[in-house]
Length: 179
Image (tube, rainbow, N blue to C red):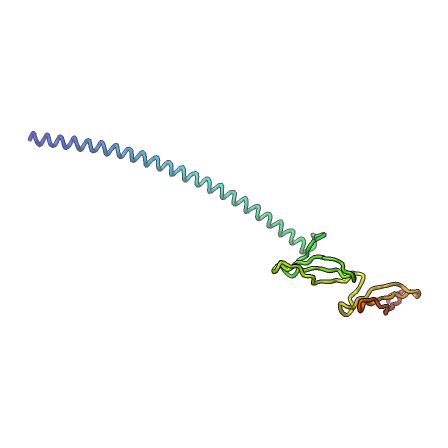
């Protein structure tokens, strides 16, 4: 019995030593787990703070974009309804955003020449000729009419531009009264 009591005592001592070792390992694991948990909580807190900051910056940028869009829309509406008049525009929009028109020159026969910008092929086209406002277009682009002078009998004399020269062919008497 003594031998078994000694064996039992030795086994108990070994078990207690093993329990103490496991307790020490458990404490170390618990401390490591607690440190990991604290690090994870810090990372989550920092991530939430960064997300809030990004969200507030995004909202501020969206508000700025919305304000700019509203201002542009207001200017567009003002231009469309005539409240805002553009002065000295370099180009006028044609039929869409790909076509623009600008004044080019006044040619030798008093035509205002305009060019059309075609964005599709990035070229200017000399497409438009307009007679100066002192002349009226007759039946086609080769015939123009303009007041030339008043004759001795108080008739307005109109000239017709035809065949690259002016022809004095029309006289109109000045009306003294309208019915």
